[in-house]
Length: 296
Image 1 (tube, rainbow, N blue to C red):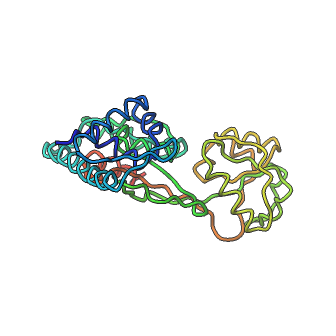
Image 2 (tube, helix red, strand yellow):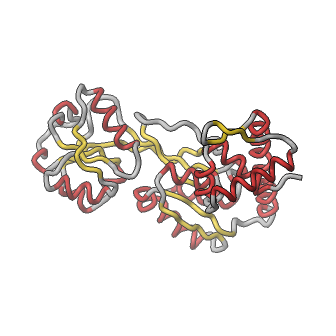
């Protein structure tokens, strides 16, 4: 019989690609991961890994077992959740990973309402950017990820996870006060000679700026990298640049200090979704939180 912990390591090796990445995700050393997978090979009586230069990759047999591991691990989690669901009311702890702007505007109010309506359910929040939050759900550190993708920088589906759309929000232009009389919508080409402020926490923000501005015929001069929207808006108010800011990012006192305009051309949007493992999708805990988010 296969050990579930070793199957999980094999599955994650297929997803993450390196022993080092798997070790970091599970708080282990690369040597410990290697030893566990070597034991799994002996249990399977089949070569699961092969060396390619200084790295390893799954053999065809390893790929097949990793596919079975995905099915087995989901089935075990489904069984556990089914027994818990038989108790009726959602209870226990729901670990949620979310990015700051959504957590502040939508998730926190939902958590506070749940605290009153579902006293047996505790929602634990961890602030993470989308890529990190999806990894946290895959490896079991979190149950639900609130993730997003820009329409100009879509993300491929994450193997082993399913998504539930929550909302779409427009991406707007935040401009220094000197642009207070600018028309709306504003042609991006008028900003070709401006300094641009882009997010520093993930590459998608740069991709959005590059692609939107390229469609307008220029390459943006990305001068500042700032991950906090409040700080971005303060900098914009002082004339240090312009930026694309999602609507939720403008729910700040600093937004009153800048000019906000919709960009001309095809709409720019940020699509926000709740992502979880298939076994958790129908659980009372996840359902309770999604119901609250739907009302906010």
